[in-house]
Image 1 (cartoon, rainbow, N blue to C red):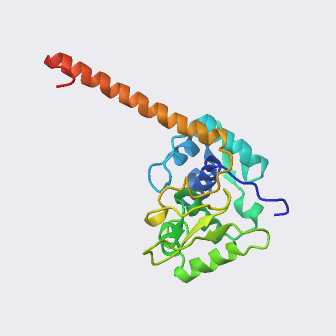
Image 2 (cartoon, one colour):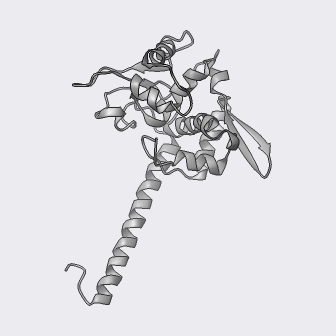
Length: 228
């Protein structure tokens, strides 16, 4: 890659990671429609952090990634479809793309955790094989794409983090990476990330209001006060 690698937002890395994951886990559905991509981004399993992104937010990330040539749009059928260009833009082998994919979707991981998480996309022979590809990504001539984090107190292995969102600034507590949101440098939050947080708050407030209304109706029918 001749140009400097851009610092991607959380939404952008989520979109990129989902495209790379689904290419290998559901090849018959790839390239993905916008609807499928949104569903993959908001998936509750194998995601850290879990997000609630709207179509507009995902589309905005797609448009940004297209500007970096990391995502391409294809037309076919009734809807536009999207595919990633990670391997061609970054000039790395498929095994390295898969490792980056898991790090983008799940946050910091040990080599052992990565081997297990990558199994549906690629069967690494052993942990040493995983570490070999990670080491190559860490000393890549065009710029490191991963970094080995300092070992947590009591931990047997060090974890690895991707550098597509900038350099990690602090260790994240807990096994398997914990929350990925605090792990990276606090570059100005993208509009997509801010909107995602606001959407989550709005959703929770709406759920709370709905529950309060339900409790009020039940109490009214039973002839008791809500406080009781």
